[in-house]
Image 1 (cartoon, rainbow, N blue to C red):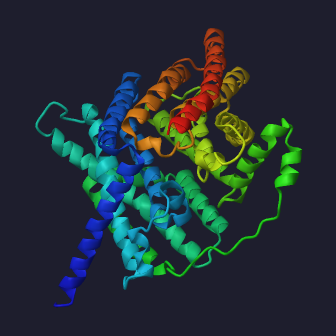
Image 2 (cartoon, rainbow, N blue to C red):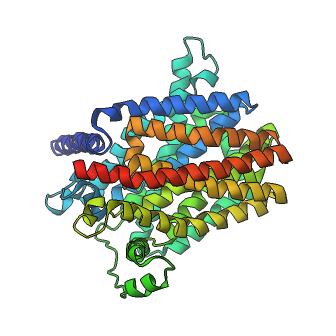
Length: 483
């Protein structure tokens, strides 16, 4: 007994320290006190989306199901946090030492410290992100105007939180297997085969019926399964694992000569492309991000179609939504890059931003084209729908890019949690995307007037995005000169 309480005390101390560290990192990175407004922004956005979907005829069950799918995907992504490379964090924050890496200097077990870290992440994001999502659905919950509403929100948060943690644990289990030498492609095939089997056999509907029909039972079963899988994953995880060293040939000169660009721009574009190609995941990262977005949207469309009988025009719908991948593609292109690194060279900040735009077009073009072609073929889009969707995809991608680079410069991932800039970005996206999605759901197949209007919209907002990206260079050059 005397040895148990000190161990618990150490765990609690580590947990409190990790919470403080997480908050300070977010506050430093995402606008200081303005980060406090981010949960409110999440709740408002979820509420607005829920009310809008309900007004278009989408049932409450479909909206709640879609939110659960989104939260599970968010959990899958969040599970990677404990394994983030120190080089990536140091690129953002500079030279630092995180509590998670203290097992190398202090008598702490790496597995134990990682387990506490994941508990911290689950609680931190579960309260700061998932709880506002549950609160945003308050207008649609039963008893929305009664004293039982808080209980309904807590019950919804419980099921969302269970799925969020389950997503985290699935990712941790996959990473643990990777540390034991299991190839990534084997895990990808296994995950794809399992998902396909659940879908084709209808097992996913049975599991969801259990989870949604008797929420307490489903949540309890999921919780027990998640805890068991988490314990096994931490046991399997090899704390001594490190990625093998890689060597790369000098491809800069070859790539620079191959680019059909002006000589002043070729070097900057070649550097950006090489940075992406030599990073972990290389050129596959933007494509994988887009495919994940496609899979999530396709799953939600299928769920909404099953419940409401409404299916959107595939070209318009996926053309508008897949354009959002412009944000993630640009984030990959700037993840390990800083404007300050170029100030020592005889190049202007505007030239650097122009080079990033060129690299974005070269990478994002095939990244969105392949999933779009797959989506319209799978859902059987009409030629007219395919054509207008392609215009929307190209125009909206450039618009989302221009909006991102104008607001965030080289830090697109950082401004996500700055409440003011994120709200501005969301408003800019909603002005374009919401009317497009409504048109995609209401007019199927699209009429000629709708087709022409949407085509003009794609061209117009593409031009707006180009202008924003042009002005971004001069804007951020003034920022860095004044700073």
